[in-house]
Image 1 (cartoon, rainbow, N blue to C red):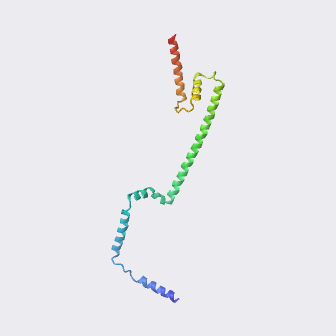
Image 2 (image 1 turned 45 degrees about the vertical axis):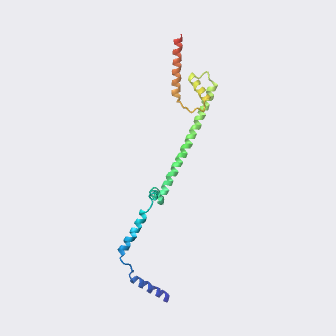
Image 3 (image 1 turned 90 degrees about the horizontal axis):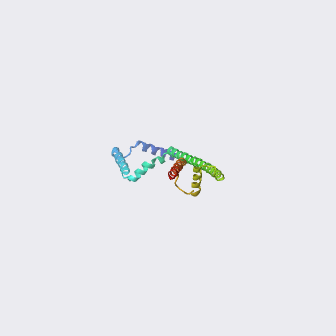
Length: 153
């Protein structure tokens, strides 16, 4: 008990006595100037990085950006699956059309035969022409052929 009482007396004596600081305001000013000087010495690149990635320290911002990234990745994957399914469907239709035309080439029209020949000859061709444009070109070709035949007569 005597140790606790001695400890209490020392603490009380220290509480009653004032700190030996001279000019407290000057000390505060010096400390604040030192803090400002340190922040002014900060590298511009560090300030730019802090400005750019400062949000990483905020927990709710990290969670929301992570959730947004997950949503974007999921939507991209869903879109890719949809596109691949549509491509498979279109390939099946093309194979069906191609096999049907191979069975009955005489009954199909001239433009369809040309389309089929173009497709079977160069499947690796990178130039894409719409079917409507190609049919229009073939019709104009046939019309030009008829007029040239009539001029020859």
